[in-house]
Length: 509
Image (tube, rainbow, N blue to C red):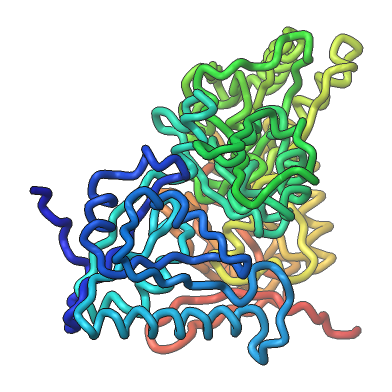
């Protein structure tokens, strides 16, 4: 005898409720427990559209008895419009309430009720609406089933997800732009609820650069099953019971060198994965090779089959040339920068080398990232709320005289300043000189944000007066934001944090 699964409801009624997962369509994929629960039931309930045909009932048909009481829960609407006062959602809510009341009457009479559900009852299933209304009142058991996701992967004969890959399951009813972002960011995916959503779903796969990888499965394990390349499917032929699949990239065939390589320069933001954009995630996942300064490369997840090429921070041109040479051999290369690649970072170095005749035909793309200045400003409040200038204090690539001239000009123009690369072990005097120069134009009480390791494990963000700025407290991991004459800083509440902001409105002369 099979031992029943643990009840999920506390239950005070006399009847018992089963949520029975039937699997993706083939009756042979029903579990033994699902068959037993149907056999134990007095009442078998199933959802259907107004045409009255129920896929769930057809799957379980061989296990229904003549003495079963059948409850067909017929949706008042599916995709059409309705004149219900509450609209489409209101019509469905009313239907669920009435359906739950019908089942409750059987449960109150002491009958066992089995609600049939295609796939798994708790996975985009209709049963869950009954569960939410009844499980706290009656003893309840949910019997899991094989999902359409698992069935589709099995029918394709391709691994769905492997190792540390991330699987994302998406409803095709999402806006196309949202689908695009999600598909670009994930390793593998399944998009469900196709039918009339298919053109937008296909568009999202194409916009995210994943259409060539995508597969299509229709009515997995059912009669009329069809599989193929998503790009080849006629939108007019797609039913609701179909899914789009991005299989595992591990060991998947990659484009041949004849398809052409390219370089994408990406920014990882100021710290770890939380700062990556979906587009950047997608580019990193698709790359054959990842090239970068070792510190930034360590922020990128290790992926099977992907080559990683780390180097020192002072060989930007050599790193760019190496990446472009890889691309010339047909490789897809991601060059990694911290922050935004176009702000004191690798985009300039790559484009400079790529402008040489030898690389003129290679595609090079730059993807934006969260800059250190923006990250620091967000932590402090909104000090960059008005016009500002971004200046690097490093004199490794330009003379200090040029830096000092730009500081004077920006200070005289009353711009907020975001100061990158303010100091290092080898450069300890620039911060002091910059402070003294700025004090010629700014009040000693001007707020200065010292933001160190924003987003990292040793993050520290605090605000001091310009006159109190101590160079000994500044290093290469620190970014300085110096306010304008209009920048304000206050402490919010007793013992609260200090916030800094620059008003968007500037006073008239």
